[in-house]
Amino acid sequence: MNKVRKWLPFALMITLAAFSFIYFILFGDNEPYFPETSDPDIIYQEACVQCHGKNGEGSGILYPAFDHSELSLEIIRQNIKEGTWLMPRFKNINGDTLNLLSDYIYQKKYLK
Image (cartoon, rainbow, N blue to C red; front, side, top):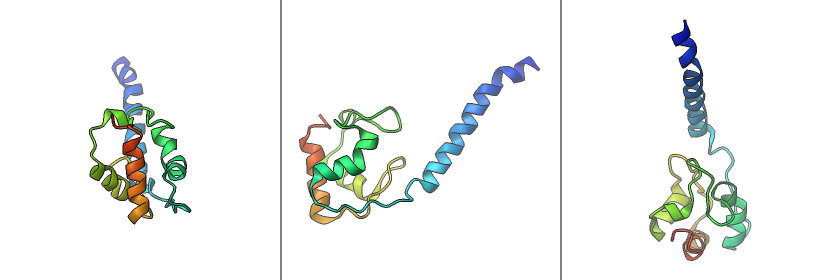
């Protein structure tokens, strides 16, 4: 019985993590973002800063810092448009606005 109690907290944490992951994958893209401007600074503040931080510093494993990534400008565009396994897609950021935001993130040297 003591062996079961010893592993119970670990099992509960794994179960909680699994359910959280499944919920995030299924429902993480519920509220689409519609940019009301093409100003990349405003778009970054509205759509990106919550996860990636004001200066691209991130906040842990789920929300990585940009400076820990080796991303090209094209991959930045692709990740914004299509999302990744943890990042929702921003399908309403298109064309010149997408290019401006990608360039903004890259030029801020968050990736350096």
